[in-house]
Amino acid sequence: MKKIIQILIVLLFSTTFSCTKNFTSLNTDPSRFTTTSPESVLTGVYLNTVNQMETNNIVYLWEYGHIVDPSGRYLGGNESTWTTMYINVLGNIEQIKKLYQGNPAYTNRMAVADMWECYVFAYLVGTYGPIPYSNAFNTSLTVVNYDDENTIYTSLLSRLKADAAAINVTGDKLTTDVIFNGNLTEWIKFANTLRLRIALRVQNNLPTLAANNIQDVMSNENMLPTSDADDAKLTYGTASGSQSVYYTQLVQGTSYLGTATPVMSDYAFTYFRSYKDPRLGAYFQPSATPFNITDTLTSTNSSLHYIVSYPIPYLGTPKSPVLLTQWGIQTGPFSGATIPTNYSTMQPALTAATRPFYITTYAEVCFMKAEAALNGYGGTQTPDQYYYAGINANFAFWGLTAAQATAYEAQNGIKWGTAGRGFNYDLGFINTTIPAGNATKIWIQEWLNYYDDGAFDAWALQRRTQNLVLPPHTSPGNNPGVNGTYADLPDRWFYPVQSEVTRNPIGYANGVKLLGSPGDYVFTHLKIEPAYTPTDWTKVTGFVDYSFVEKWYGTTIESLTAAGIKYSVISTY
Image (cartoon, rainbow, N blue to C red; front, top):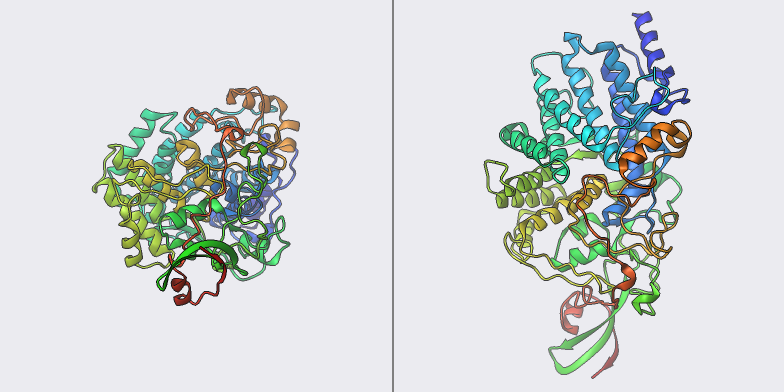
């Protein structure tokens, strides 16, 4: 037994993988592994995966999701995602496969390991585009070429189907399972959920394959999640080293780019206000120091109009803090507001040390089934039934009541088959009106559901649907966009310099070639995206529009008094 343990540790911690050659260790603690069982390795794999995803959310992907705004800038990727995922995650999985694949005593555990590998590869191909895949762990190669996106997605869908079929609930058990507590039926549902997610994502580039997989998964709905009890999640601990990255970086650590807790974006704020969405308060706290707006109200006791100043409880930070000269705006909205004092911060429960990271949720499954049914791919319910079930599940997840969900769903634009008029974004050039088309409704609710752990999937959803008109960042940092004036949502990340550009230059060049781009650019469209023309933000007409925050408590000064709000009268007419 001692010899077997030593072999396992050597394999796990001294193997160098060809796609990331010259790395000499996996940077993990060998003392973690006290048994030859794959479960110990997988526990570390899950933690490494989720820790990296939480880091990416904070630094990159929350920005992409446009609900929470940590820094106000789009950044184009990092080195650690590539090395962590290929070495500490996929590398470990590959090593336990070498030890146990084909052994009937480990069939279920190998299926679970492969599901997780598919999950991580889907994250990587959705982030970079072409990546090392089929030969990523072939140590005999000196050059590792990349696989194209379609090849990878085709393989992942096939593998996930086989993994679900391979699980025998009466077969070998998982002695340790921090995701589903050893419930093998849940792992089948997880594989099917990932398969549905990927199949919907590749409808633009692999329509026939996508349709076949969606129909197949929808034909066996009992093997998809049916409640939040089926959610895939990793729960953190209280001990040092086991706490959530959100907690260690945003509560314990140095604040990221000047904000101790990320704040709500003004874009999401406009949607919340347009449709009286109670998730505003579920997702975010009121501002520490409420911002005062100027509004025009009437009175029940006179015929005068009153120009008044009063505080509003919530505020979202600008996505375009620097005004382009072409917009013709001298002063931006909410001038003088400071981060985080005047803006609404994330609810503190979201950055708690033990708060779970949610990999899949029941609400997401409902919205995916709604889209599948809307496109004619089957289902036991109608598209609108799945859609409302998703909203209800999301509201319940955040502690909101069924009555609140019902009132929200009754509004035009939210109600199935209706159009709803939204407010203008605070710079005027984007409107949050929701058309009658039902696909749009599904995608908007799915986007809102991806707060806060699902930021990567929100990014993927936007890229494949182009559903939201997202405002530009006008302080683009190292991602200068057009003439250094603004940056749009990135389509992908740069390949890492040290891991690939320097150490695998021929393979890297092959990857860039597969992109179909003259270079390694973040604005190169991936295959999941439809053809689209980005907005030229220098040619839009801007105007400051406060209407989405006006009349917060009502249309009269008496409504302010009734709400206990102190106000000052600037003038009357």
